Length: 87
Image (cartoon, rainbow, N blue to C red; front, side):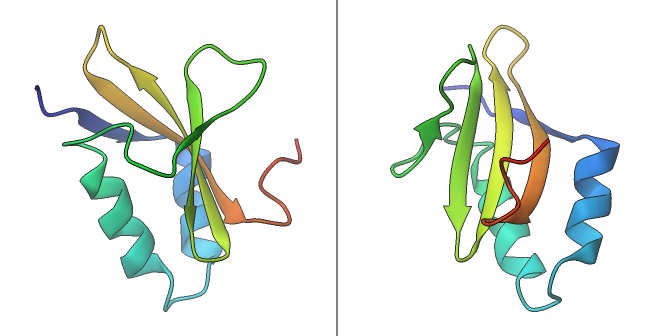
C-alpha cells in the first residue's frame, strides 16, 4: 500500500492554531498516521459526500478528503465536536 501525502487547507491550519495547546500534538500525530492508513478503524464517511471522512480525536473532529488516484489526503477542517459540522 502506498504512503499518502498529507495536505492541509489554509483554513484547517488556522483552526488548528486556535485549539487547546494540549490537544494539538495528539491531533498532529493522528493526522500523520493517516499517511499509512487513510481509513483506520473508527473513521466514518460523511453522508452526501463522495470522499469526505471524519475522525474523532478526543473532543475534536478532523474532517478530511481521501483522493486515492492522487494518493493524497487533504485535511479540510479541525474543530471541536460541537462546531465541526457547521458551515
